[in-house]
Length: 334
Image (cartoon, rainbow, N blue to C red):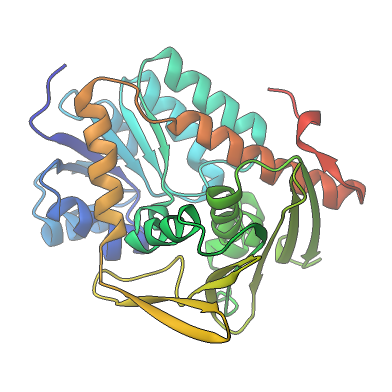
């Protein structure tokens, strides 16, 4: 099928959709917002007015619309599998908010259904498209850091308000599903796939969700990646990489607005250098990448494999906390 633009249907009128994803789609030359689905007519019509879309309806209306090529799912994590499977069976490509899944089994069902129906499934880690990470990789490739030794990533912020979906267990709440996926993904982005995982969670007994999480990912060559996340914390959105020759630290790694200048700090030879990174819209860059993949009619990107690899690490972390032991990734069969 040939596309002039990828026609998107939106499932869920969330804050991230309103503030970041839909503006990115509107700015993209490859995407078109064709229909907005919500639980309420009021919310759907409000978003239609903001983003210049004329069609709205229920989630079912969106996935059954033959004029839609792909859906953007911006629902609570606990609903992602249900609507990804329904969209795939309706022949729609899926761009799903992170985390796309709450378990490895769920990730496999989603991935298998998309493959069976010959549609693509992308987990929406927008931050990886920001040019600052390309610059960090360039420094590593050029040997500036020397031998890589360890990675430390942290994404933490204040306690969500009472009633927020992030605190609702039935909707996939908790830091493991909300913010931990970012530093885990960043660790994988630089160090590759770990061979073992150790995890400790602090769980609120009343809410039944985890409020703090720490993960250590071990690698065959001795490298270590540490990821931390918390609710009720001083704000942190960063990662650092220690090498034998230098130390690299990001000023702001994950949540970056389109107009925000950011920096990479590089410490070497008793001096610190600041590398300025110009503003970029990592949401639009992700949308453009996804649309280009769909429009090419070729599978040149490993979206589905990447989703499963991420889900394996988080599944191993859950098992590690529950069983109080180191979990080898090789134990997980899919």
